[in-house]
Amino acid sequence: MLPKSISVGRIVALCALAGPALGYTNMQVGLLHAGSTDVDVRSVLGQPTLVTELSAPEDGHVALLYAAGPVRTHVVLQGGKVTGIELDVVSIDPELLPERARVIKATMMRDGVTILLGVPVEEHQWTEEGHDIDQITYSRAGEPEFTAFLVDNLVVDVRLGHDKPAGLLSMMLPEPITNASVGSQLTIGMSPAQASPLLGPVESTISFALKGQPVEYAHYRERDGNGLVTATFIGGVLTAFRTWPANVEGDQP
Image (cartoon, rainbow, N blue to C red; front, side, top):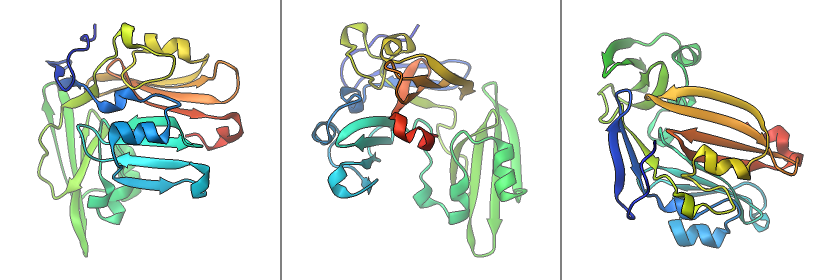
């Protein structure tokens, strides 16, 4: 059972589930929901680190990146209303990496990395707290050395050099929402049971484990039958959602 919500700013739990340290903490983004306005977003999260216009400025279609805080956060607005929020629970900052390294994405499998980049110049493997760790390093003339770290065959970090980062097996998740706090719109921190009444029939589901925690990535048909909703639950809480109107379904990932 997930821990109950407690006071603002306090970490709810740090525990070992299948090895890695798991933390739940209050995040301001939990005050937002699908349909929140641009004003709401900036009032809650402040000024974004980066703003990307997705169409003409007057359309209100933008992607906002918030790099500060416990977890990097992406917010997408269409027509000035929130249609998606995503937490980088496993965060890789491409700006710090050479161009070639930026093709490596979080949760990519080892074979995917080697297909794109070839055989690493150096690799190490070991077991830590019951999990298989891979460290694969790439280097070539005129390019800084960089290393991808994988836990149980999934990329969890990419960085310059080859030193092992701290917290390789840890994860920070949003504090679970109490039943009394559940509203009528999707909100980060909801459990699958809390989100279910707000979602339509399941179209497809992909399930796997990330650092020992269950992950469910699912597509849902909206309740009115038009468009899709994608949702990601990690460790039993909603960490990302995106709504896709029927006329842009072909663009959804």
